[in-house]
Image 1 (cartoon, helix red, strand yellow):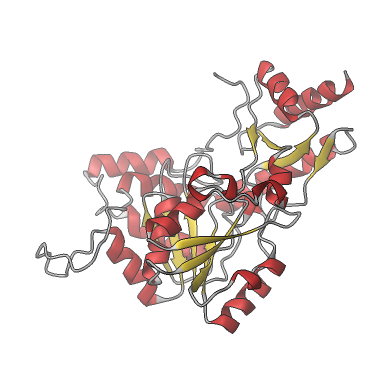
Image 2: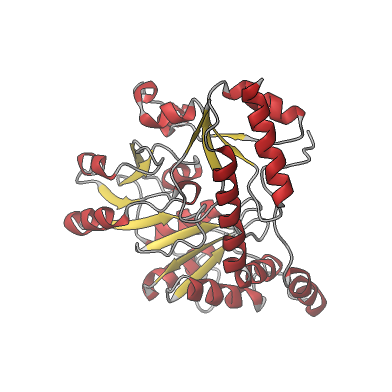
Length: 351
């Protein structure tokens, strides 16, 4: 179905075309092109960290981060119940076991429930900054220090939230705050971790390129074409974040006070504008008929077939999953677009 107001849309108003054209005309379209290190350096600098490692997706970024930290079979990783399934899958890909922790009322991991899930097999805590809300990182970092654990931040939805853990992994999928179409990037201050992630993403070739591979690795590389777009997007990141902040403010003002709509806590950066809605499915059908796309909240990890646990109906994450949705949220929305969307929501509940 084609929507007049899609839930997401990239904002490609900078140097994307210039950089990708140069990549093509220069013949550098593979992962060996110059835009890859330029993007890595620019994105790391933006986040006030020393190293960036570009890769093929946010999922592969998480996988590289965990592998670089030595996570493997027999290990456990603390993962939120309320997240996109890629967070859990990245753990499973390493052979380790994700151990799920319920969310608080801001949808982020409930930090008061983490400690009881730590066992001698726990190796990493993976907080996820859901929809652009930064997790309460101080107690997470304190727990990591106390139990000698590492912290991998899933920042797929939170470009602009400055990392504080050992590694932060970002997605650059087309619906994210900034994009390269498909892609991801890890940032860290640890040179050993940065080298290890770069080594693993490129099939773990030895320095002499002898085709002897001493460890299991991946082809998780980002192409120069993708990096050209990612660099141009990074140059505009502050502008895009500021535009999205105005969208959040306008939605807040327009939707406040509607009977049947519950607004969610503020976001540190706006990825998607999430809310809770009575008669959610009816509302979504009504908006779809008006050309307005919406999306459901994530479902609890313990409800997923691959991780099924009978506790899921009682989880806070499930309570939010049952009535949550998000509205079109992207930097190309005009004020008139937002006013129209808000007006349609109001019309539904006033009928």
